Image (cartoon, rainbow, N blue to C red; front, side, top):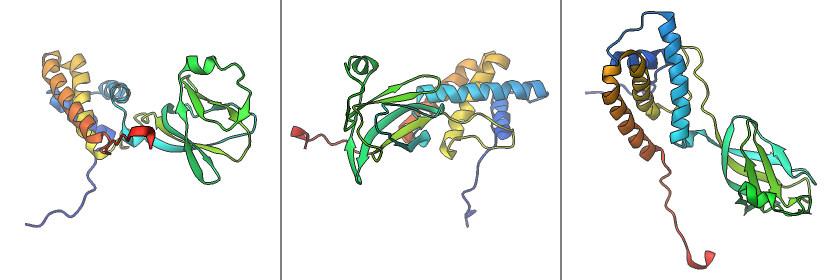
Length: 217
């Protein structure tokens, strides 16, 4: 028997909310219920972001440097950074991400040289501090920025998640809604959500092998 030959299946926000309601044994009957469900869906996406580092939101970012400038304001959507390198003349050199206390203890933060360390200050609008201060305006920083999952928009729009995340989002939303509209199902739906989130985290994790060589070579 022939298969469909297509791989275009997805669900928009309205479909996700409707499916979650059905798992609670309920039907959407008012605009208030739909608005409340969208609010819960936004909260769920933030909770998933907190419990799991979604690889699909880690974006390669390039930051131009300026001579004598040690601090750079980043996008408010950036929650965390990793894998920072300094690119000079087409060659990348790894930089060390340091904690606030280490950066704070540098006596002369204005010292110019080849940047080798970076401190990511987690503010509402984050700031990246580098040490030593750039000695030229031709180097760039390249790093992976973990960005916020986009808000739930109009109900006919898809969510800012990959297709394999839809099941766990529906399970999570069903649990969130059950707390409000079907408390008798809360325990069962939470169990399903936790199980699906564990499976999704395992699937979404990096599959790259880690090799550690003696002597750092």
